[in-house]
Length: 389
Length: 137
Ligand SMILES: Cc1ncc(COP(=O)(O)O)c(C=O)c1O
Ligand code: FES
Image (cartoon, each protein chain N blue to C red):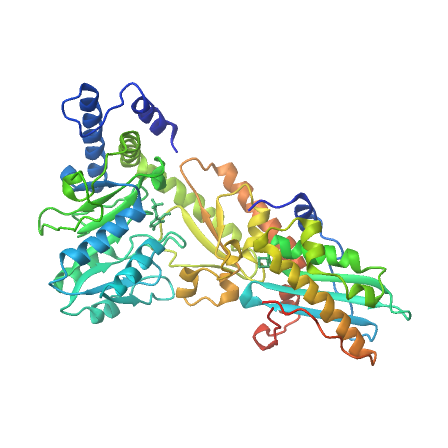
């Protein structure tokens, strides 16, 4: 979290504490003003009106509210939802849940570079399609979808367009009007704000979009999300949005230069590959496969870096990343992939350190790798009969 | 994931990394796992005329726990006769390296590799193949 965000939040934990909905309590006024102000800060970052912002507990809740809320609200119009295979689980699992309740869901395959095939999308839309939900930027590979074109196709056929923009908002310019977005989920902790607070943007004109509340109760957030607001969290979210709005351009330029340096240096290693379209990509993400080295083993050598592995041995499931598999990566290559994430506080020295550490670790682990040895001897690994355990 | 000091030590300073000549009759090779599963272990032993293991080498593609399990296995194998080596149990490895439950299969892989290497040596030298008693999955 950015220390400036924490500074903004601290007073709201004690002296200025009040219930944001208790209108006749002086402390309540302070809290309510603070929430109004944060709502403006959030709206301004994405080119929205503050009345279009619903505060939630994070992007997971926003994803649930958007998809379930639209499905319930528009069920007389149709029951078909279109999404894609590289979405976050919060979207995919919500869609799966709705399938049990009568929804028909199309999970579009993405292209090898992670981008949506617009022709395939248009061909999938029917008169029953009520919602197209495609994420803005992917969390594992950073690929940015052609959001405007997707929105236009949805609208041409009378469907709404929802985007999970958790990874994009605050990192690249996102504007709900220019991008043709009807609903959008995002989260404070991905923009140097606090954990456990997020928002759903719900368009109020051209057209006016409605969602059925998934949290019933006191009618907070214009009836769309009941529950007493998390005032310090929301204040921090607002501050985080303001900082992103002011600093995003400079930060994106700096981070993409560092990312490109990291990527170019690591691609000097033999048999290493970038995953995802390199041009349409968030500035701070690089996902790289180092063939014949297992990702979790590699991560262990890079404990000081902000990395995660496409290998699954990290979870109990032992399944490699479904996002990488959706791009058509074989299981073994998916097991050999690492996601590098840079951020506001990443320095050039840290990137240089990361480059050196990664190169050393890949070399060390390849010396240990029977697959690397076989590759070097010219053995075709696809023809080996493996004994699975 | 928190790794035990012993896992970190074997991962950073793996013992007995390398390759023995698998065409020699006194070398047994066990290659287990599959790249798609994210783990492949190759363990080799060199055995003298008294069926005592004089050298052991490994190479592993896998997580830190898999690397540590196979590194440890090579240490334990050296100096043992092949009958005693056959008795190495994956739970001994789990205990020595303090592996958490999600990493038990890494030790199972090491046990499988030991048994596969011994059986390879036995076949080469006209001995019967020993059943691998456990069924793990
Ligand atoms: C694309 C995407 N959607 C949703 C989420 C979930 O966000 P939250 O943790 O705020 O619920 C994440 C979080 O990491 C994400 O990257
Ligand atoms: S080799 Fe798969 S978790 Fe260790």
